[in-house]
Length: 163
Image (tube, rainbow, N blue to C red; front, side, top):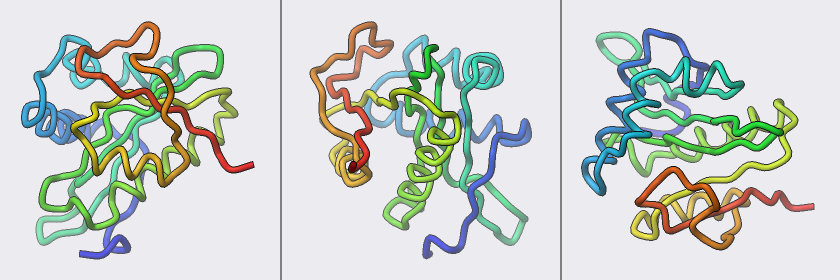
């Protein structure tokens, strides 16, 4: 599958279950689902959207209609500081360009929000994801980030666009 076979859309309640499904897959595979994950995945409207964040989905047309094959979110911490979070691509679609398309769409959304800082927290075991983030302009900073929400986070990166 090539990257052109999907489209990126904003949150719609019909994709809420996919937001959880896609993220729970990788969380359970590599880590454990933490309480903060359960809160956000169970109610993205309250924990992401109501605070000024965004949730995006990559949709792919199939025999049964469109289905969500990837997702990413921006969580607003306040003061124009946003966390890139809950990025996931369906296992069979990884490596097809969907993750990059989601990441670039999230960065474009962040630019539209006129934020002051875009950061992410991750784990050093997720090497392909870290390489993707670095290729889009995320730079390593001391970890963990002060006030980190995640026990699994040993990577803290900040988006520093080329000037």
